[in-house]
Image (cartoon, rainbow, N blue to C red; front, side, top):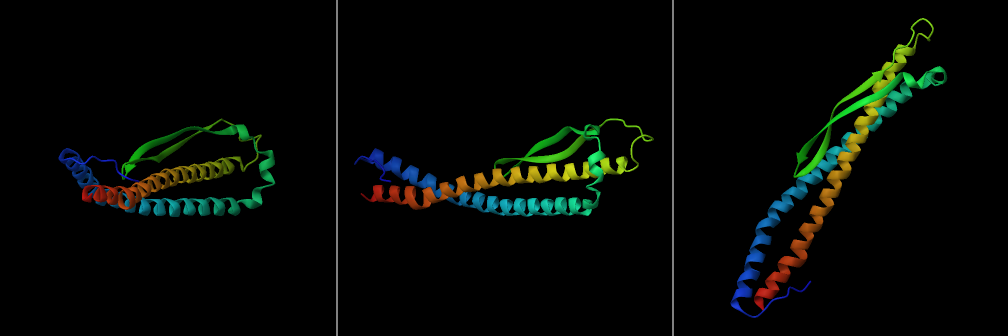
Length: 170
């Protein structure tokens, strides 16, 4: 990318300011990129861990598959998911605080004995699934910000700083 300039001192001063600004900003952007890279790795590891825990929990209760046919799915529902935002390297990230469930009352005498255990199990599975999705969203947001920051670093290092240096030399 060729930098447009004029052959006068005012233009030369402006080019010098632009070059200095980019050279000062480059280390900050590089540190942001490395922070985002480590956070993306941490988020990927956490998402993979939640996925493994969810799969293990589902596999642990795989023997109950036949019983779930008689379970009333309207007994349990997610009432609210309490999220907040947290900034990591200037990127707003969702943080899960709590999952609130709405459990409808059911008759303990006419329903099967395992219903209360089944509801607890569904709460665990749903909470893990929601945590997994929050970490996936966190990973996607951080990865997008990391890509954009990497593009900006490359733009500064490989295009703009050399372009301004060439324009000043001319």
